[in-house]
Amino acid sequence: MERTWRDFKGVWIPKEIWLSPDLSLMEKVLFVEIHSLDNERGCYASNRHFADFFGLSDRQIRRYLVTLKAKGLISITILNDTDRVIRAAGKYARVKEPQLRELRQLAVSLTEKLSVHRSRLSTGRPSTLDRNVHGGRK
Figure 1 (cartoon, rainbow, N blue to C red):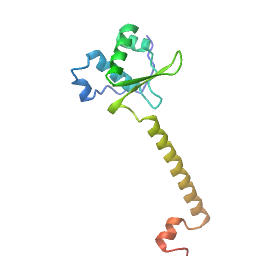
Figure 2 (figure 1 turned 60 degrees about the horizontal axis):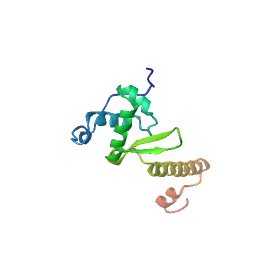
Figure 3 (figure 1 turned 180 degrees about the vertical axis):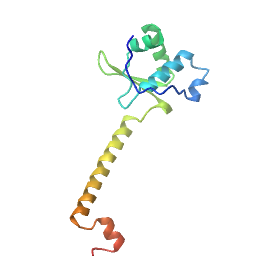
Figure 4 (figure 1 turned 120 degrees about the vertical axis):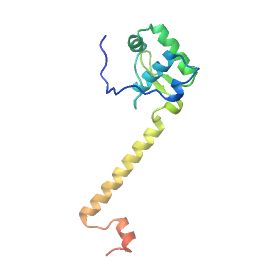
């Protein structure tokens, strides 16, 4: 079996997951694998990937995914007939999409403000900050 390369540094299992009597060992490790693959776009791994990775059948993986979803640990979004996105949910979720959009907008706004400030510095015109600190134009 050929494995997809990823920048893998090890496994960290949150205390609440590891000590949970409500999760089987397989649910715990499947959740951790999903969490490790969940990036800004989500986890796109197939049931076949998980089945090969853990040495289980597709059917067993489907059952574990259903129980993890029912327990509120993951969300599953169906994109079309062949694609789905799995995300860690609740307190284990990565940055949520609305928050990610806000951060991107903030970054764009700050970049624009910095650009304006730099252009004013290069033209010799005092910036608003300079005028406020020094009491007007000089």
